[in-house]
Amino acid sequence: MAEELQTYLLEHFQWLHRHPELALKEYETTNYVKNVLKQTEGVELLNLGLDTGALARIEGKEPGRVVAIRADIDALPILEESGLLGGEREHIKGTVILLFQPAEEAEHGGEKVVNTGMFEKYKIEKIFGLHTKQNMPVGTIAIAPGPFSAAVDRFLYTVKGMGCHGSAPQTGLDPIPAAARLVGSLQEIVSRRISPTETAVISVTRFTSGTSWNIIPETARLEGTVRTFNPKVREQIVKLMQAQAEGLEREGYQVEFTWIPGCPATNNDADLAELVRKEAMEEGFHVTLQHPEMGGEDFSCYQELVPGAFFHVGTGGKYPAHNSKFTVDPAALLGASKLMSEIVKKALKAS
Image (cartoon, rainbow, N blue to C red; front, side):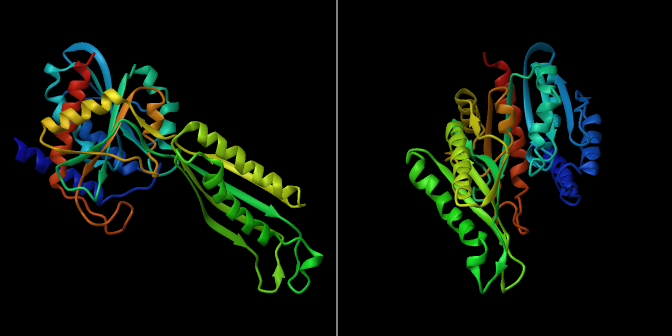
């Protein structure tokens, strides 16, 4: 049975990796997932309410709690959970919701799913999710209660002065040194305005200005990202960044500051994190403590509605995610799928 399931998972794993699709354009992937769900005994296909992504339900023999499993469309270790759980619905008390989320990497996929109202419609009470981890061997998971990954926000500054010839800077208002000072002052927010007991990152990742070697430009632009765990620190940083813009305006510059909020920080429910830890150990996984990371994960959108736990599963390999040489050891597929199946069944039984 285990060998058959491993082969089954591997076939879908290989097909999906031969047909990658970008955020909100996962049409072929969506059709593939839906066809698999339709053909799986005990699985009822539902309407997610989005152009891409899929939603399904497994009704247990008896009524009970409603627990969801979330996977973004490329999260292959979870893809075939329905095959493991559907055949055991006679022993399930409650309902399992299978969420295949579009646009995890971009375009606010988690937020779009929340806005469909599916959590309220299907009365979801808990949710679980996982992500691959390349620097952990197969047979290892990382889990922790509380902060897991950071809130991810984007910012832009447009600093407008007055252009002039490079030989006569006194006749204009040069935006480049002003923007350069802004870069330095943004770093002081974390080092001098935020408590050392908190964690935050402000990174300027793009600085553009000018069109010619001998002309002082009219405008300079900065762009970057802010990463935080504490919502209060997140709010404080926005206010301090706005204050930096106002400081330049007092010097005569016109400054436009734009804050583009992303997903909040992932914050694991302590009881559910402990459930994951115990079940992983029972399944023979080596469990490590996950230290909070500054990368983002829009699973956090769901945790703002219901308690949830998100964890990493070791998949081997030496190249990080998003690297063109990233690989996953297929040996991780069956163990991760079985683990998620057991976690959900325990969560349905928990009080």
